[in-house]
Length: 228
Image 1 (cartoon, rainbow, N blue to C red):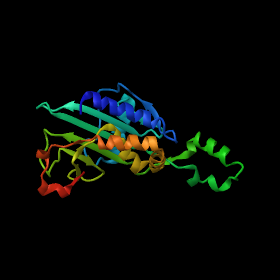
Image 2: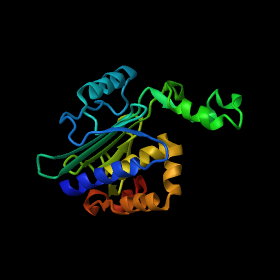
Image 3: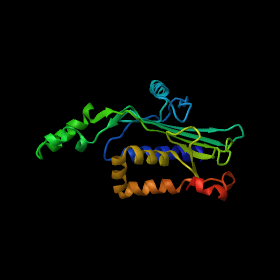
Image 4: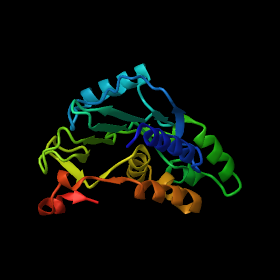
């Protein structure tokens, strides 16, 4: 991915999030702190997670800050051999959004007052509850450290032991990474986006534009381990 395509993917992402039916993007930093802090382990302890999360907030080292204070980082660099290195991180906050229809207030409103209460609810802190298990996802792309099935060139880290990597046959861009996270952690936003034909086309185009990884970095013998 060239620096231009990397930047363009981020710009397209911001414009798409700004058009979401529910306001989800609080802040976008076009030139975030150069220090890309992320948990050292793929399965961080709660203490490590909280410490890193707070460092990112304090240093404004995020690219995107969501309305619930969750964080996205997008890093692009070069390995010692000159090949490309990508790292994207999503760290969900310890606050979780609750739609009005699932809140404790919903059953007490009448049809006449529903819209008024809905607006007041979304403007208050009551629409958030404590998130005991924040979702963490990291994407890595690094040909230099690639070791076949042991350490795939392109892979996702879920909250799994460090050896648990989900290998990919494509190189993700910031747009596709965020859409994947939204689909998992913010289902209501994702569902509304794909109901818009224009946004759905943008999402599909971003996905199909992902570069296929050179076959030297994976073999047919191990193809069952890789997700297209």
